Image (cartoon, rainbow, N blue to C red; front, top):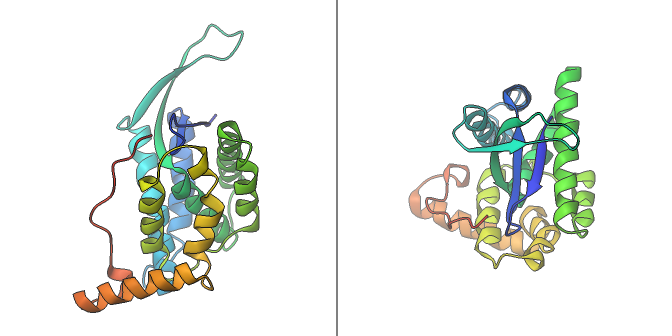
Length: 221
């Protein structure tokens, strides 16, 4: 069964599972990603988001990320799990992209189980780090939209903003506000962000959706 724990500095979450847990989750994420048309500008960004998530899961079950030893209370049997880490804002965006697109094709009961379990362990980790995580869970339940043609570049900008801030619960509690600033198309912050992207795209002679950040701050988990 998947396990999830907040990281030491509250920057994100560590997700663990055995090979079957992680490979099954990978298949769910990968299948949903491939229902999205990369040629459709409103789906391309979401496809990129989910493929990034699938990439991390695949490396986890291949043993390229984290390993840990688990033992359930009252059980002498030790379990060896593989895992990976994600920044809070990243996993919230990935879960939202999964939820918003899972309803557009016929998901199996296994896919549904994987999605529910993923949401359950992430919500548990949010509350474990800080009871204020309940407000963040409300964001998930309301489904802020990632069906934006600029979703992938916005996700990168939000990641950089969050990781660059001073670690701790003050930063954690800013997550709802940050998500609103970055994904609410009516906010002044969103409009300024898109204007800056447009300037960069014009200078490079490309579309905003072709832009990507080349440098990211070091993550202090």
